[in-house]
Image (tube, rainbow, N blue to C red; front, side, top):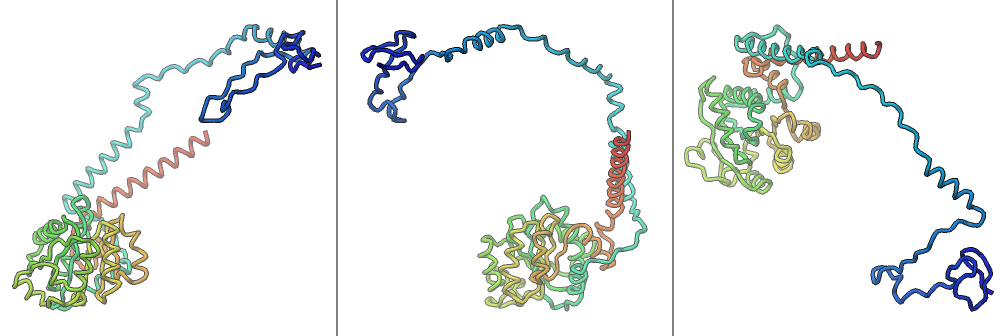
Length: 354
């Protein structure tokens, strides 16, 4: 006897189909390689569904539940009435934009008139004071190498720091030399000295070493022989008084104006870490935080950055400059931002309480 695997009825051993449900009693063997994935597709097995004996009542209940009509959807909440355009415009904070425009116009007018707020000068940071005293101690025969490593996109920010430093160096009548690792560097140096010449006449123009391509390799060559990395005319070579094989330690000071972290790190690794010449870095606000560890370890003698250091250096120098002229605008902008924060805080408290 052979049992049916569908309904369980007993059938003769030679029967091909079940006598009760009519289903096949034997399953044909699978074809060769039919179940090997990737060789031939799997052989499909199609069977008809059947409920176990005694579950017909559940089947009828399921069919009746499916045929039953679904309940009507719940009534949607009424949409809020549209706010008129005039009322919506009144809710917008137009006053904030008008106040900002008024503050900007007021700052422009007062700055153009030369009005400065009567605020006491804050004490400069230690790095600013260290840079000022180091330059103030330079003799007239000192040689200072200026590295210009920024482009026109950061010229406005960097000029605030460059002008007081150049004014101080000019007052010391030291010998200056320009060099750059960036193609725009010589143009930025020329613009900075042209801006300085509108205030005080140059005692003597700086020696131009030009643009040095090659990144770290160029700095290594500069450290070994500054006078040999570029072709200098005889008068410029005489002013520097550098031999062809004399190292960069012959300079009394190196100042880098930087708006790139990678370039400043190369100056620290190739120059400050291997030579005895002090390095002052005047960096942009985005670069200074990455260079702070080098300043803390003493590899950078002094790190200057941003508007506050430019203002502090002008105060130490005693010569008002661009940073001092912008002090009123900076103060008004700061007061405006603080006022917006206070108003937003008060409005948030009122919203929570109501």
